[in-house]
Amino acid sequence: MSDVYHIPAMLSETIKGLNIKPEGTYVDVTFGGGGHSRAILKELRNDGHLFSFDQDIDALQNAIDDPRWTFVHGNFRFLRNWMDYYGIGYIDGLLSDLGVSFHHFDCPERGFSFRFPAPLDMRMNQTAGRTAADIVNGYSEDELARVLWLYGEMKNSRLVAKNICRARSQKAIERTEELVAASRIPAEMSKELARLFQALRIEVNDEMGALREMLLAARDLLRPGGRIAILTYHSLEDRLVKNFFRSGNLEGTIEKDFYGNILTPFTLIEKGREASPEEVAANPRARSAKLRIAEKKLPSTNLGRS
Ligand SMILES: C[S@@+](CC[C@H](N)C(=O)[O-])C[C@H]1O[C@@H](n2cnc3c(N)ncnc32)[C@H](O)[C@@H]1O
Image (cartoon, rainbow, N blue to C red):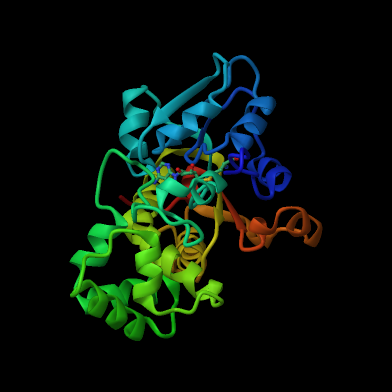
């Protein structure tokens, strides 16, 4: 197992893009190894504050000893509730570096990787919710095919779902190596196996649902002039963030005023920036990252919605 918890993608671009106010209140909803959080703290004065969320208690091994820092062990879908709990009405900026840490892939017993034999778990929060085994054994063939198609973009989703269902009718699939065998995806097709595991991980952790709820809360919590930076890693979440920043709503519905101006609470700052070739060479896992940043407009130009 690697002892590197995570290497943050586009670190300097993200911090610069957040345009941090030294006295501001910031939230990093995906603490992980704490690389982005540490860089935000460097920009804050003594009267600034950073709240860092992670639903995986393992992240606490990277805790920062600093009175300006608060760790929230929770799902970022409850951002609004947690900010209410801490008496925070508005924030000056928010960062979300979506998905899992290297730690998750590199920790065999967590079941995130097809490279290691392990129980089929894949929960970021190991104390709650369904495991990947529950889904693989409990979903109908149609439901499984839908998950593989939507979240793994697998062209042969129906065939793979069928293979899995045939295998599980003989014996429940409880382990990563059993899932690999059941899928009948040849070992050398590692990209397809990665897609299968990614799809299940997204479903297990309801990553799209959590992202939707967090975006709405962030929109309402951000102070005018405050910025929200999101690093996405697959096309579905990237499309959601892109449309949300353009429209201010989850449906991506563009509304215009009488003069044809688009009514949105955001000004776009970064529109899907990718890591430089130098960064990808040093950290290949940054290759699929896309950085999107938006700034909350002044109230007069806001589209107030709930
Ligand atoms: C890509 S890593 C973040 C890495 C971090 N930026 C760094 O510099 O090390 C994503 C982290 O967010 C956490 N996470 C993912 N979804 C979450 C959610 N809905 N709520 C809270 N934490 C979440 C994961 O457990 C993981 O540790």
